[in-house]
Structures are given as C-alpha cells and as structure tokens.
Length: 365
Image (cartoon, rainbow, N blue to C red):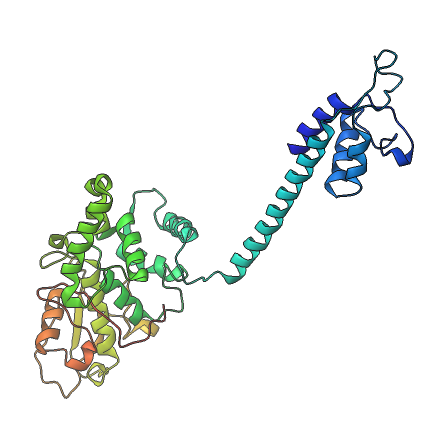
C-alpha cells in the first residue's frame, strides 16, 4: 500500500521530467513515467541505493520531457521532492525495522515458551477433543468418557496417557464436579475445574475447600456481576451439589482410588478359596458377573463394579456384596473393612465431600 500511494504521487509530480544520462539519476530505466517504473524506482530507494541523487534530480527547475504538454520556458520537478523522498525513506525504514523486530520477537517467544503454562491455544485443544466425545454438541459427556478424554489430552490441561491412574484419580477427586441424573459432567464446569486445578486457584486443604469455594464464588460475583448470574453455578458448583446425598466425580473416583490402594496392599491379595469382596456402582447396580483374563483383579474407570479382589485369610469378616460407594467410604473412615494403609493419604471431609490433597506425592500429570 505504501509503494502504491507513493508511486501514484510520483507519477503526478515527477512524471514529466526529461530523461537524462546515468549521472542525472532520472533515466530510461529509472523514472516515474509509468506506474511499474515508479514502483521499481521506489524499491531502489527503499534499499538505500543513491536515493539522495534521485531526490535532487526531481527538484524544481528540471527540463521537461518532449512528450509532456508543456510550453516553452516551463520547467518540471518540484520542491516537494524533499518531503516526498525523506518521508518515504522514513516510513520504509520504520516498517522494515518493525518487521525485523517482530520476526525476532516471535521466534524468541516460540523458543522460550513454557509448555506447562496454560494459554489460549489449550482452550482450542480442549474444545477439539471434547467434540470427539460429544459429537452432538450437547455440552455434556459421561464421567467415564471424561476420564478417557483427559488421558488423551496432553498436559498441562489434560492428564496425558503417561499419567498413573492413581494420580489421575486424585486430581479428579480434587476437581469434584457434580453429575446429572445420567452421570454426565458439564463442559464449562469441567474446563474451569481443570484450569482451577492447574493454576491452584483457591485450592486449599480438604477441610478448607468449602470455604475456598465460597470465597471464589464471591470473587467471581464481584468481578463479573453480569456473567455470574448465568455462569456462577457452572464455574463453581454450590455445596448442595457436592455434599452428602449427591453423587459427584470426586466420590466416584474416591472409590476407584480406595480399590486401587486396596489392590496394592497385602489385604487385597487374591485367594481363590475365599468369597469375593465387590464394589458396585450405586447409581447403576448391574447384574453380578466375574472378570476373566488380563482384566481380573484390576479396576478400570469404565467398569461399574469390581469383583477381582478377594479377602485375605487373615481378615475374618462377613461376606459383603454389593458394597456401595457411600458404604465403602464410610468403612474406609471407620476402618471396618479398609485399613489405614488402603487410604494412603485419602482424607475425606465431613459427610461425603471427597476433596483430597496429594502434596506428599509428586505430581506426574
């Protein structure tokens, strides 16, 4: 655009100057008599090659071209040549310098960018992967699909496929999103919980999380009062959606975490001669069936219950089947079935609020 404007002005002001020798700087190959030649002359000036000589050759008092409609004794050129060429060189130098600096800064930012810091590009990745699990754009997916999605999403926003299940469970316990009647999580709630977990926004000890949630809700209301009326319960779910009597992601994966810990202790060793201890999803309660093959004795997020763990002969307990999530958590607190090594740092709040802090264990996700 700069070359276009200055080429048009040059044709109108300096286009009638008589072509001279090479020493005159306005020659057959270097003039403003056509638009193309004017652009080429300006490009030469932009490179800095003898632009002062071209400027002096365009001053007032120069002879006019024979084809120009000028009378005898009239001269061509203009004193505007000073302002014309000086301003053009200034703008060219300014643009070139900024372009050079922009390229350097962009490459420097790319090379020094910390991939562990959340940015706007992570939102695009989250939306893209969510769409794969929610093709109908309902804004909700099942909690088991959410777990698979986060495992397929690279850190820092997701967990990554190298994240151990135990650490992934602990993160989901801290996030603790509510579930609807179909055991689905909401898009906005999940995204904000991931951001809050990653940036440690109002994340405190388990016994202080209720107070932290209230403070965060108040902060959001003060900063964005209009948006808070519509989005507050999605961003920070109220306590009545998380406490006793309400099923949430934290409670479900607390059960998975307890069984994962139980499986790694001597109390969870398989003994074919003893009855089975089962954990059944309280929300679905499917018919009992046994696991065989490589999946026996393992717990997966997609399974609604687990029957691969048998009681140790050293535990003289009555047969228990089925065992709900609430019962499992209550027994874990009282030590009736699950001893303290099983919890391994899991400290639920009063009721069934399953916030958890894993500061004693390195975060690999």
